[in-house]
Length: 286
Ligand SMILES: [Zn+2]
Image (cartoon, rainbow, N blue to C red; front, top):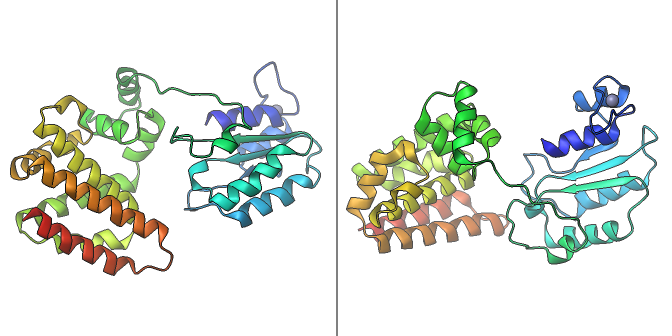
């Protein structure tokens, strides 16, 4: 959102101080998400951004700007860049064409791409306090306090992402997934979750599962105030009473390995891999 506002200001034809006018042709094009010099290179559907995307970016920016002014390149999550994409992009950053602005977001803060970071000006943005965010969510008419806190913690404290999450179909999907998982545990039949796990958003569901298992560990060692899934307290309690934190920890590790294989091995059979993981998990839990 911040980058969008800055971009709109940069592309505004009649900016007033640090504000865009919202009336000129540039602003109108930005508002309708149609500005030919604003290039959002990673949309939500992209799981990775490879060298072809970078080549396309280069092609776009070395052409003259469509509206005769500035050009903006936006990479919304640099973690999605493959190594070859980073290398190709470095060359562009070293000798950029005139009047071109690059905005890159790094959510991980892990400094994966040192060479990339060394060519950028870095601004660290901090999230608002949890109390402020919860109040804001309340003002936005999101009533259930537990859901708000859960969504906020899943999104590392970002109130906007939390609001979007709660109001989306993914939230309903998560509720349904945990309900099914709960019944799979009680029936001693973990394979029950396979159809819904493989159907869609598999990686996200594995993340939810791991966060839930982490919560059970926190419950075990009496660190309840750090829980994430506040709307699943009963389930967390059940898991923490039934399993030691050694078993929970080992379970998380196997799920992380499974996630890694799903992401990194091209062409792997997802259903078979998930089936293997679930069978292995049943053994671990016994
Ligand atoms: Zn304007």
